[in-house]
Amino acid sequence: MPEPIRTTGRKATVTRTTKETDITATIDLDGSGSADIRSGVVFLDHMLTNFSRHSGIDIALTCKGDIDVDDHHSVEDIALVLGTAVQQALGDKRGIQRYGWSMIPMDESLARCALDLGGRSYCVFSADFRRPVIQEFSTEMVEHFFVSLSRTMHSNIHIAILEGRNTHHMIEAMFKAFAYAMKMAVAVTGNDLPSTKGTL
Image (cartoon, rainbow, N blue to C red):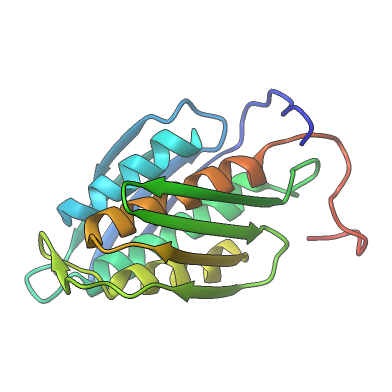
């Protein structure tokens, strides 16, 4: 893979307010992995902080959600906001690597992620978790998070657990695999648009 070109200014702030959630997120694709995340869902904070650290994408995010009802709306809407922010920060996508992939172990767990920032929304998710809940976070929401993210990020995300037993390890390995795939895909390695269509 070519060496990334140093860039600045690929930032975006997105706010989404509904009757269920009030979210503001600011990202910097060329950051240092700094995270200030207050989602209202403690385990999701941990996962997004890991994502930020390992992708190098700075994230500041606050969410006031109806977590007294469930974590569903907060997790889903956070994914929608983050996807929109990434899409906006990418601009015309000129010069980006576009594709990214990684395989990350965490003890007995092994996660794989491959993605394409080419403008088409699609998610393929493969994982079975033994625990239904971790610290008030519904593990079924991991799949919904990545599906929702792929929608507004206009990306293909293929993410899977190849080995694993411990639910915490499996989910954390998935977020870290996604982080390293994103780090590769958003890297600016040239000046051309990475598409034969002339648009992404």
